[in-house]
Image 1 (tube, rainbow, N blue to C red):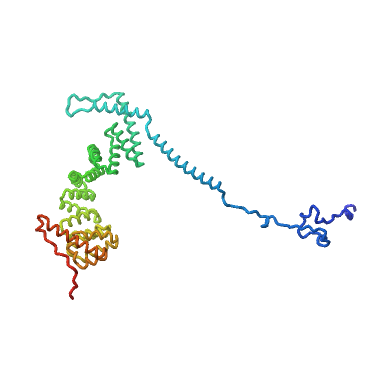
Image 2 (image 1 turned 90 degrees about the vertical axis):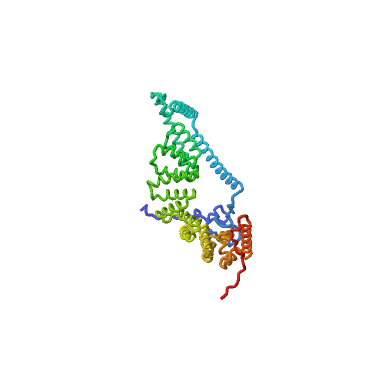
Length: 425
């Protein structure tokens, strides 16, 4: 059949001939398909170096080091970012300050409101019992003025509260002053002003405000406590003690009020009354450090060193401080117990360093134990033998000067310091 007949063979002259090495498609052949006549007859003397595209011979050297221009551009970009941040901060601050400032219209409104308030206050101000006094005429104009004043006072008070929250106390005080000029009896403004004064330590200025608020409502324990603290801090101990006694009628076990009352009595010189109050504080709060320190100081000033020791011992456990160890060493030195005095001085030196203790050796309260072997050996270990001898010489000179003063003949001279003698067995 025609479909299955045998195909005719291609003639020889039509068959593809092998490409010669110098032909155009030489490099398109595989490396192992080169014709044999290139190696047999030596006709083609051309040498061809075949290299791969990814071989080291074709690989270019790439320098990854940044150029000076790129580094300069990076630095310039960083500087611009910093400048923009700083500039934006200052611009934002200026915008906020500008927004916080009242506009010209608002200033005019405030001035007019203040003028109206002054006129009304001068018109309404009357002396007690004067028959010529007359009440202001209440009409729509007065109500309109008062409404404007109240709105302005509320807006200024909100501004003052915002300044107080941000810690800008001076601006807050200025705004509160404006509120009180518009509405003198504004309790919210007065209380906020008291808090700012107490926080800033302006106690003398807080006292009249507290009194004014308590005149309106005396049953305010927090305000009474602020007044008590302001009176004591401003040095008005007698007035503070009177207020504390009145507060103790309603709160007999209030440790804070008792502590303030005791401090006031102590400043007035009534140490027995102060000691009783401090002990009442400790009955309610056994770990009250102020009361312990007060009791210890009163007993020490009364030369009752034995009763002062337990309070200072407890203080060293609750809050170790150099002054507590010093007071313990003084108490034992005054009781001629050199060993215990040196023990607490050594503990203080171990906790706070020798420099904290070295200044104690010149204290005349250690004179009763200065000649003992324990005190001398401890002094030699802390400041050295030469330092100890210098302190002893200074102490001896001070005793002689006191004895030579007029009226000093009654002062008993301390016996001269003698060198240590070996103990007899």
